[in-house]
Structure formats: structure tokens, C-alpha cells
Length: 165
Image (cartoon, rainbow, N blue to C red; front, top):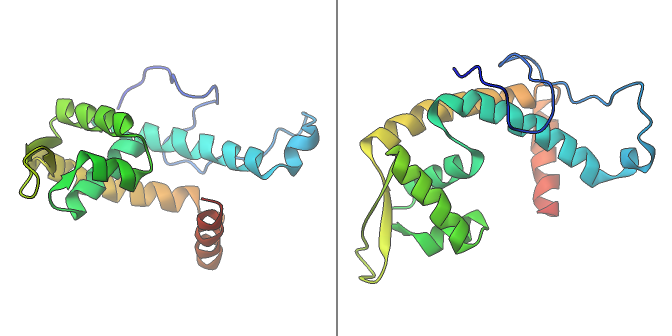
């Protein structure tokens, strides 16, 4: 595990696996910010993202890389444009994600069985192994970041976030 200082949001790093502190600072007046849904979402997202990156640091996995690897695994011969659409990002963003995954040895481009002008994406053997390992850790991360919620509240939160997204 890396002990280098975080280049991520200027939030004190917690011990990996510790409950996430998402409470507001008691000695700070937040004004209208406490009324804004977007502000609350962003504070939670910063903490969740920080924990995710800390856990995934040994494999250089970011949320977009994990999403891409999962989509590639579950969609045989997925093309780059299809990956971009599925992830809700620009094609250029998907190119960056795939290029980084190729450099890590997790994904490879191969001939598309349906379109000779495009490449299909596939996980390498190393990518398959890494994805199995990090998926288990990400499930633990997800349980940790939602530990303050009941099972019913987790379902409700996903449904509410889906309405916003």
C-alpha cells in the first residue's frame, strides 16, 4: 500500500477501513450550503471517492476504470463507442480509460466480430484476476460507506439517486 500523500481533495486521510466521517465541522457556519442537496451529495461523494481510491491504489483502479472493466467483462466484444455510451461519457474519455487499462495490462483491443472498422474490448487474464479481487474489495468499500444506512435505506437511496441521474 502506498504511503505517499494524497493528491485528492484536501480532506484528512483516514485509516483504510475506518468508518467514514462525513459530518459537518461543528465550528463552521455553512449558511445556505446545508440546504443544498448538491452540496450534501458532493461532500459524501468526496469521502466515498477518497476511500475508493485509497483501497484501489495498489491496482491503480479508479471508478471509471472499474466501471469499464466490469462492462467489458459482462458485454462480450463491446466496442469503444458502446463503452462510452454505457458509461455516459464522451468517446474521448472512454479512449483515455481504455488506454490506461491497456497500459496496466488489464484490457486489450481485438478484432470486432461484427465490425471490421472497430475494435472489440476484452479483459486480459491479468484483468480478469484483478477485477475479481477488486470487486470483492469494492463490495466491502460499498458496505463500509453505507454502514450508517439500513438495508431499506440503501435501496431507497439508490432509487432516489437514479431519479436524479
